[in-house]
Image (cartoon, rainbow, N blue to C red; front, side):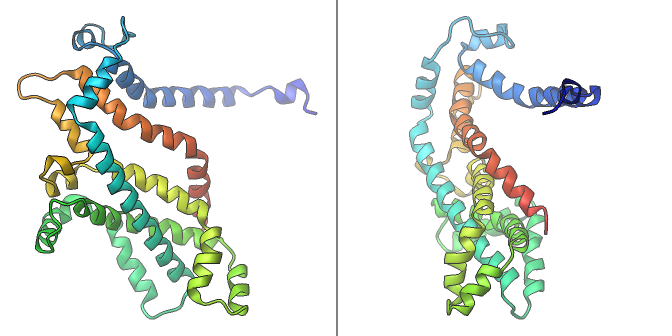
Length: 279
């Protein structure tokens, strides 16, 4: 048992806690302000922007849902995000397995070429990608968002998954090879269960990135019924006036579910990123 003196925190530790609390409060205050503003009237937002709502207006969420047709946008975002994340994580895991466990000509060069994707900003490839999607008749379809979203996530996902594979001893894979298992069986039945924590981490990170993607959705989708949530939020902004209570309600509907998902699984995200940091 530790004595009272040993359990007492030092002034330096209390200072660290205080600084951390200030940083966390500064980071989360905009989100809290957004949620509180969603319950206010348009007039009250300007009259008392930092106060609590005098009357909690739940009807803002109903009106925002109906006015912005958020149901269809939600469905499109779920389809795009789920499909793109599945493709990215599965292909990246297979690629990371090949880069760490298999020997083939050009392995290092191919891996370095793949990492170039970490350096390219999306605007650089927007016009060539638009031309390619037009030529293969995928423009103005959900696949115009799914395939670029998955491809754009590959570089980071492969990089982190490869680091995680390097931190895992290949003993069980070698034992499975001696028992007569082929490469596919080793990958699917042995390797995937071992690297599942890192896969879950990448699922969460890629879900957040693809869910919030805006530029490609603006460029590649024309029909209103195929748009995703980030683009659909533009409907709430008018040329002459904007109902900010509906804007904040729509932002809350769009943002809060992803935040809840992240906080529910943040322990896995931190554990997975900590493991991939050691190569």
